[in-house]
Length: 205
Image (cartoon, rainbow, N blue to C red):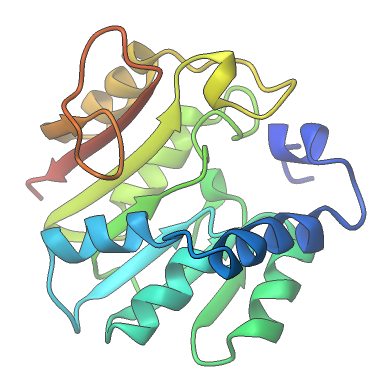
């Protein structure tokens, strides 16, 4: 039996994937830039390297990366999210798997990105396993980039905070080294009182 993620508990059930995507469609229609995460990735590695969008949701980040020339694979535990992603973007490879049990045929990604509060929305007790499975799919020198909220204002309602110290500890156990940390995907400076963190870790291999 697959672990029950916090996303499945706070998402609102059937129709959540469509509503989630509609929110970003509305922002884009209003002229908002919804591709900050993809731009962040592009500043770290150049196409056409392989990128894993871990916890891809409806595929917003992976679809943009594919459009930019990256070889991108999107993975999510939510079947409805994956269904929306497949319908919207048949050019990207989509896989339904829980990150804590990740096992893909290809294990040669240069970068794994976790956007949209993936870390705090993991199933309770699976943080270390998820990070270890991500590392297992990296090339030596590969990067793990994760952005997530650190307080209730930056998290979905009902989602508990995952302390940054817990994430850093899991990364350290998995063999990752912190390279840099920002307060937003726009690379604003990180401060200890920041409500959000974007962390870049490297696996030496």
